[in-house]
Amino acid sequence: MPLNSPMDKAGHGTLYVVATPIGNMKDITLRAIETLGNADLVAAEDTRHTARLLAFHHIKAHLISYHQHNEARRTQTLMDRLREGASVAVVSNAGTPSVSDPGYRLVVAAVAAAIPVVPIPGPSASIAALSVAGLPTDSFVFIGFPARKEKKRLEQLSELAGEPRTLL
Image (cartoon, rainbow, N blue to C red; front, top):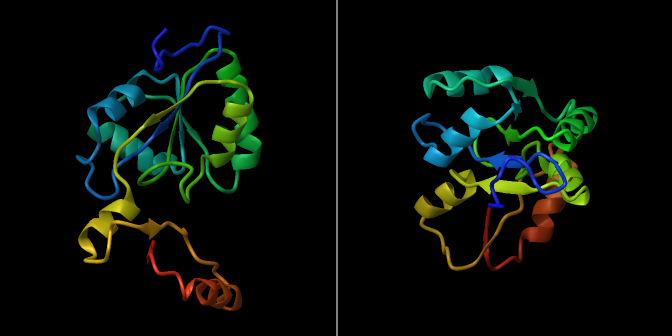
């Protein structure tokens, strides 16, 4: 059975982690378009944003919200659908889900339940920024977003001050 088959041997569906464009709606892979069009359910960080992307590419899909405020609760709903054999594509507003965006909890739950998880690669904001920054690219560290509170953010930055690699 191919890795990207919509149903595994146990009858489970497949979770697709689909990267979406960072800015230009044309910056999407053919595989992402195909996956979004064939998924039984698209779990989106912002359904309005994703609906515009899908409409731009003439994709009809059933959307469900999946964001930081409902991620804990919604993960169970999506896991139930995956166990029933549905294929679920998770998308964030831009870039790759679960990398500083919703999706991590769902991926962890799917892996723990032996449900296939398939990455659909595409744009990466961090790599795109690094490629044009003029900074060393042979070794870098992805840290993600700093804390919002000033004191905690300054502590984080202080801990990273001696890091010799390029920081993202």
